[in-house]
Image (cartoon, rainbow, N blue to C red; front, side, top):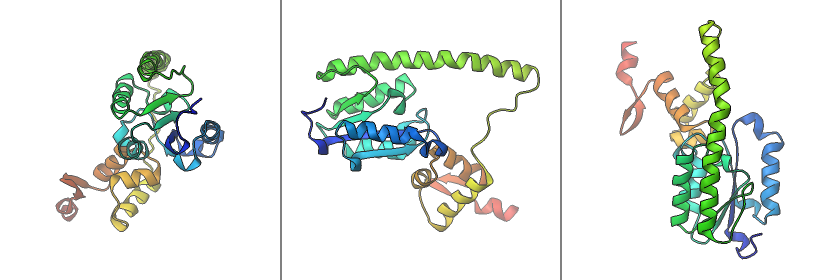
Length: 219
C-alpha cells in the first residue's frame, strides 16, 4: 500500500489503555498489523494510557510527533481512536502532521495518495467517531444518575493506589525523574502523576514541583 515510502521512513503508534491489555492480544495484533505494512519493528512506538489524554500527557506519542517524525515520513495507527477520542484534539494533531508533511494513515479508514483528500476523509470520520462515542456514553450517564438518586453509586475506581504512590515517591525522590519519565515507567498519565505528587506527596508548583517543606514541619 505504501511502496512509494521507504521502510525506514515508516513509523507506527500502538496504544493500549491499561497494563492488563499490555499482555493480551490487542497490543501484539497492532504490532503485527504494522509489520505487515512494512514498518520496521524498531519504528513501532508503544504506550499505555488513555487516548482521551492530551498528546503532551502521553510522553511516547508526544516525542514521536514532535521530535522523531520528519518531512515525507509516514505515521500509521491501527484505528483512529488509538491516537485520539476527541475531534478537536485529533484536528490539532492532524494539522501538526500536515504542516510537517507527514502522511498520517489510520488502517481502519479509506486511504488516498492525495494528502489533502486523506486529511478530509480522516477529519470527517473523526467527527463521526466522536459522535458515536458520546452516544454510547449517554446510557452510562443515565445509569450513573439513576444510581446516584438511589444512593448506590460508588464512583469510578481510582487508579491511585498505595503501591502507585510509593512507586512515584521512589522514582521522584530517589531516582530524581521528571513527571514525564515517571509517567512512561508507570504507564499512567502525567495528570495522574502530577495529582499524586501534589495531593499525596505534598509537592507544590514553584517553576517545577518541589516538596513543601514548611507544611511537613507543621505536621
